Length: 374
Image 1 (cartoon, helix red, strand yellow):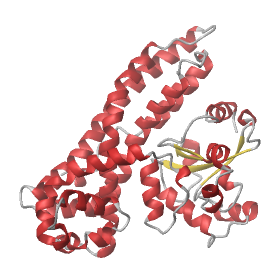
Image 2 (cartoon, helix red, strand yellow):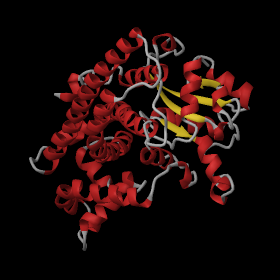
Image 3 (tube, helix red, strand yellow):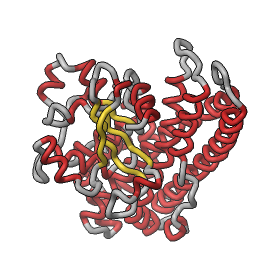
């Protein structure tokens, strides 16, 4: 790994998992003596179960490591010394050329191994938001211990309350489709169905009404749940991003700084501010696609609008996750790095940090696919 990569890895030592990073080393430190961690590991391979899993935006020289063109990859970082991440670590990307051979030779993980399946499921996600990661694994029959998701009961309760408010307009329609909802508190009942990992069966009447094949409907319901989660998460990010942007503009590097470094910091600040604003606008535009489709189903008698949304939702969900994940990463990591108990970054570290943010935002301001936005 380069010096820059080592510094970034060391910065992750005590940070919690985020939309971009699943810090299994930290989970191991905090929960290795618990029965749940021992009985329900995320990975059965002990080395892999103490890795750092990162949603990484590929640099130009990394894109060629894949047979299929992609811009975001799942990076597995294996620390050389878990007690001192400054030493660095080895890394590989899921599905890079030669990935299967490396897994089998280095870890004894064959293509049929359960851990290979888990890596594939994680790679399918656009970000590592704990709620979505848990749902992705659950719907595929994998139930790791709760400690892997850093998801508090309070967060689940707030998410549930948000979903209840969001789907209230669907209740009248659903009562006509599902006799089970024709009972006391139908909103709570439908919310429970959407939040459960059996929503594809519980809401099958809606799928029949929309005339979607089972596989398209199942995938669409998961992505619909993802859109609801992202819409909820965006509320928190919106309240914090303004302060983070202002802080990025004001922060001063400690120690000596030369003219070239000063110019690079100013350039990066302006670029990040511009890209964050564009990314937030693009994210809001994608959520409006969902809102328009949902309104067509529940208010305007146009169920085909929601059917088309569910059919196209996997691609929309991936783009939305990349955009919101980049902004969430900046908010969470900037708050962590600039906490009152931490010394201000020097010029070199600040340039690295701003460069990382700029890389995370690269491409997130691209327009939504026109065919889907129409």
